[in-house]
Image (tube, rainbow, N blue to C red; front, side, top):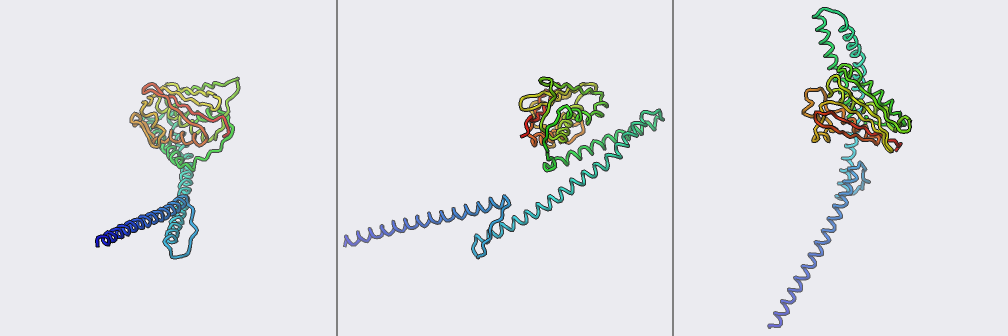
Amino acid sequence: MGESIKGYVILVIFMSVCCAVICLVIKKRCQEKMENIYQNLLQKLDRAVSGKEEQEVYDESLDAAVTARLNRVIQIQKMDKGRAEKERDSVKSLISDISHQVRTPLSNIMLYTQLLSEKELDKDISYLIEKIHKQSDKLDFFIKELVKSSYMEQEIIIVNKEIVKVSEIVEMACQTVELAALKKEIIIKQEISVRENADCFCYADKKWTIEAVGNVLENAVKYSPPKSVVDIKVIPYDFFTCIQVEDNGIGICESEQGLVYERFYRSKDTKDQPGFGIGLYLVREILSKQGGYSKIKSDKGKGTTVQIFLSNNEY
């Protein structure tokens, strides 16, 4: 009797062990199956994120249902992207058209008010002319900022690098701020340092690089005191050519020097000056797209030096 009970207990233990082993095997296979399902789903999601549609399988499986829905999401996303691109192009075209249409009559208004202000007129009339002139300046500023803001779409800044004479970039950039400098009686002093008495050349997009250098010069004139000097130097190196703009303005504290290239960032020390924090952001975007970069050296109250580095190589 005792031996039969003992045998029964052994049998029960053996069956329990077998059941436990079977359960572990089943659990492991289920885990492996679920892992394979999740891996397959992740791969489908990765391809969906990259915009690649899956080859549909026409059956009643769950995998086929997931594939069909992912493909539908991709199709909707492509349609939305196409509409967004079309709307963006329309906005870009509208901004460009408005800015060009408005600039001509505005330039004429500014010219006529300037001519009238030089004549001997009644005090009241002179006062009104001065008001018109100030408002024209404001309008001119906002139109320029509107155009700059449209450049923030990265697709607009498409650079075509070619070999360019650096002195030409500097000359044309200076012309863009000539009027603003004259109003504040600021002297823009150009000093070109070259090696072996040869002119400096670099590989850059001429139009966009003039825009970048002009933005730096605009800030130098804006934040410098009247009757001061803005120095421009062209310094050639082995792999880069540096355009250095140095002013005697309000300066930038060290904690903000890494922030001024951010979009819409404006220091609390510049709140009394018009602007939207776009200029240096565009400088960074333009230079990065053509293999260049920019650096700032500044002390608060002691002026700012901005260095623009343009690549000497085609690639």
